[in-house]
Length: 328
Image (tube, rainbow, N blue to C red; front, side, top):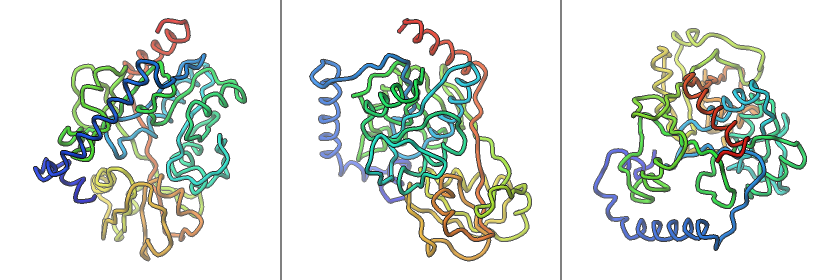
């Protein structure tokens, strides 16, 4: 975590030195949003329900596990969803790009590769979300589109908005960038359809999401797994290049893993062999997709899955059905 991030979440008054930049950010973002609202900038409406899963703060909050779970819920109800991602960190040159099982994180980004391992539906990467959405409709005939992130990407109109919030860090000092972690003001949460809180306490009207861990999986041999209790005796190096690495380390500590050291890298960091020390290494699944090509036999990742309440499931499906029936 950088000094600026620490200041955001410790509510350090030093951030007020950045007030002029925050005022500029507010002015630009407000004018941009109003331009879409008044039709100055074009917002494209697709003929199927468009669901945006995003956040109003920078950094990881748990969007990817939630997208995976939403796909499962929709498929169980007979829908044919498609997932649209910006592909942050990927260097693909041809868009829209369909994410395949052999796609690499260098091409399409780490999160799409992770999702490809879990979801059974079309998954497309395109920085131009309108173009990517149209591709899912024309080439795959999807009847629901889920946007992984893109809450502030107003060029693509949406029918349902979900905000995911880290239940530990929440909104930090509640200031806009760069004084604080927010892309939009906290009042934006009042206009979305669902606020999903990843761990911690929930306020009235919000929905709790918990992340459940599975068995450890070997990076070299995907069919090789073991219970996390196996790493309670030997020293382990834990690495994380995610939005909130401390959440991962705390999870390992709660499982009584013997952590010799914890190494933090920037979110979406492109790992190289020299980044990872010798010995037994434990990482997130998001990081594992970038390390398989040079993985050692004693490297493992811990998969997690999102658990949602039945109340959320019912209300979410009700909302999707209403949109399908023309009730906006």
